[in-house]
Length: 111
Length: 111
Image (cartoon, rainbow over all chains, first blue to last red):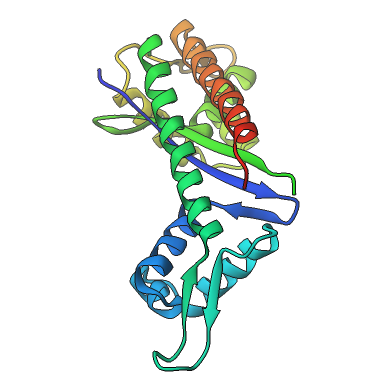
């Protein structure tokens, strides 16, 4: 029989969960849409939930991940900082390496 | 800030999930209690749920994980097979190795 091994990773600080799959999806959606409310809507998530996730991430990081602007021509928006982009890339890289590691482990065993 | 990286792994076959944390806990509880109903009760799980989990595991394995006996002196029971024991050890080992791998990856990055 053929088996596949799957995993889910998340990162915690003393304040609780910092990063996980859903939070990374939110950051990516913010990068794509340039707006927290649009990002939330893309993910089928309430604005409040998205705001809370972002707020929770901010508690666990010293550098901001997202810069929000209010008012102005476009009615305000949200954009990833360079650090936010770095965080996404770092999380994705570890996730990818974890999958490769586990695929390799699966090859070594018999189930 | 100090971060911890956590993970959850599971193994799937073409029939769906084969092994995960909950299923391994159930197998361990069966090994400990010698009974499916006692194992379920230890885990605060209904007998039906435990039975379904075991049934689902059996669909994804060619060798039985548990041998059940009915009636007799002790009123029947459930015992892990050698293969069931092997499956627990294998899963736990991969899980442990995955944690070590991720801890090590975390050391290499800045968040």
